[in-house]
Each structure stands twice: as C-alpha cells, then as structure tokens.
Amino acid sequence: PLVTKNINEIIKLIQKLLIKKIAYESKDGSIYFDISKSSKYGRLTRLNKIALKTGTRVSADEYEKGEAGDFVLWKAKKPGEPFWRSPFGDGRPGWHIECSALSAKYFGVTFDIHTGGVDLIFPHHENEIAQSEAATGKKFVNYWVHGEHLLVNKKKMSKSLGNFYTLDDLKKKEFNPLSFRYLVLTTHYRSKLNFTWKGIASAANGIHALYHEVAFLKFLEKKIANSKSQIPNKLQTVKLRDYSEQFIAAINDDLNTSKALAAVWDLIGSKEIRPLNKLALLFKFDEVLGLKLKEAVKFSRPPAKVGNLVKEREKYRANKQFVQADRLRKRVEALGYMIEDTTYGPFVWQDKVKS
Image 1: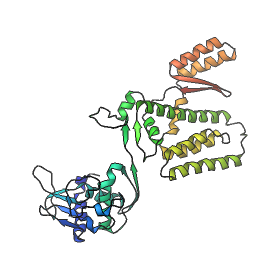
Image 2 (image 1 turned 90 degrees about the vertical axis):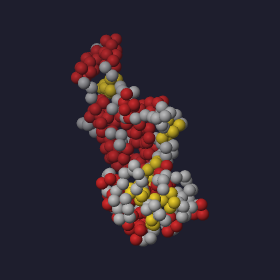
Image 3 (image 1 turned 180 degrees about the horizontal axis):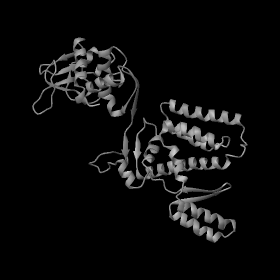
Image 4 (image 1 turned 30 degrees about the vertical axis):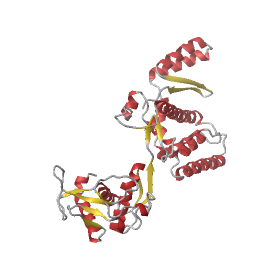
C-alpha cells in the first residue's frame, strides 16, 4: 500500500497519541513520540534503559544504536519538501508511524509475524512497537523474524563495489533462479549468507540433483504401477510419519530450513517407502520450501527427436550392437539430455536445468 494514499490513517494515529499525551508538539510544529511514557521501550533491542536519552529529539528516521531519543511522528513543512494538510499543521509523516498506520489498517492492530532485516530492529521496529501499543493498548506483533545480511565475497553488497547482483544476472549465466532459493535454504535466516559464484554453482547442482530424484521417482512409479509393492503398508505409514515429524520439527525450530532440507534428502534415500508415497510427501514439504518440485517432472520429458533416438538405441542394445548404441547416446547428450540405464528401461533426463 502507498503511504500517500493513507495519510488520513497516519494523521488519526498521531491524533490518538496526542490525546493520550504520549506525543507532543515541538516549537517548529513537528510532533514527537515521548519515549519516557513507554515503560517497555527498548525490550526488542535489549537497550539499557539508563542509556536512553529521553527528552532528546531525533528528527532523522535512522540513528545510532543506543542513541534513542524522542522520535518524530510528523515533520513540520520545510521549503522544497512535499507536505500534506493536518490538524497540527502542514508537513509529512515520519517513517516509523507510516508502518504502524498501514499495518493496523491492512493486518489489524495485532498480527502474528513481522519480518525484516536485522538493520531494522533499531530504531524502526522498536519505534513501531512503542507507538502502536501506546495507541491501541494491545500487543503489536507476536513473533519478530529478522534476517541477517547477505554478503558478496564477504563484503556488503553495493553498486559502488561492483558486487551488486540481480536475478537477471543469474539467468544470464544460465542458472535456474531457484538455485538462489536453494542456497538461502541451506543457511539459517539469522546467520549471514556469503554469496559467491562458486556457492551458487554448488546450490545449482543441489537443486538439479533434487529435481533429478523427483523425476526419477515419477519414472519408477510409472514402471511399477501395475506390480505389487513388496513394502508393507504399515511400515510405509510409520516411516512417512517419521519423516513428516522430522521436517515439521525442523521448521518449528526457529525455521531451521537446513535441517528441513536434510529431512527431504533422508526421505528420498529411504528404502521403506514406495515412490508414489515419497512424491506425495515431498510435494507437501515443498509447500513450505517453494522449490517447485512438481515442475521437476517436465525435465524427464524429452522432445520427440530425443525420444526417437532413445528408442533406436534400445534396439541396438537388444542386438548387442553397443558401438552403434554409444553413438546414439552421444547424439542424445549433444541435445542436452542424459540416458540412465535402469532395470526398468532407460531414464532420460535433461542435463542442465536452467529455469
């Protein structure tokens, strides 16, 4: 939502704080939040109450940790700046009050999860809590989830250093953009993540291998669909429950996605579960991970030209004409597909998953 379309909501929120005498007007007409009236101020950041500079006004939206002061809610009009009319004079809202007003309008006065980068904990999120709870008398957010910084070659990503990348840069290098998601999932969100091209290549191999396994499970299920499973249903039920609990426990452990990925690979390697049941649980896991595993099946659907070469190769193999069969394999590989010979026949797989 646009702040410019919600100025009235912001003004109403500031009016509430003025009526409760938790906000006050300065000599220049700006409105400030009085942090001395907020008994719990600093609890998110664990600021030392003694270090708080109560009564010190901070007109900037960002300031140094530990330098907390009364923060601006409404900035009085200045030459050359945009402004809006309000009962307390012309001006524009501060950054923090914008978020509280829009959150209340679109999510309600209390909502469950608030995310953001670690650099937003102070002062932004601390100030959001103070003004929202002062205005409503209700808890603002139940869970705060702060992500650590993404580094590039162990340095902060910036255009000035020339280490600023976008998803289009990954595409230009023929990486599946979901490789980056896989990379992110391998590290806990509260840990710094160092991006390197070597690292994204490793992640690309990881998601490629995962897609391969999913497609191969689909291939196996089709081949054994009419055969009686040798795995007892009771054993499958128990093992499926175990892997499901392993995955859920990882996610509930402060979103430990690396452990969740380990559960995915453990499930794939299980010998006690039929391919169809594995696939169903993997797709359930992917509702959380968002790696588009259902789309992996398409990478084992070769075009007609490749399919015809594979069929011709099988005829040569049946006649033990292995030299001719190897020539056809190379032609298939030149078209970007790999052939894996299994007891159920050839499994054809797209060698490089781009997107």
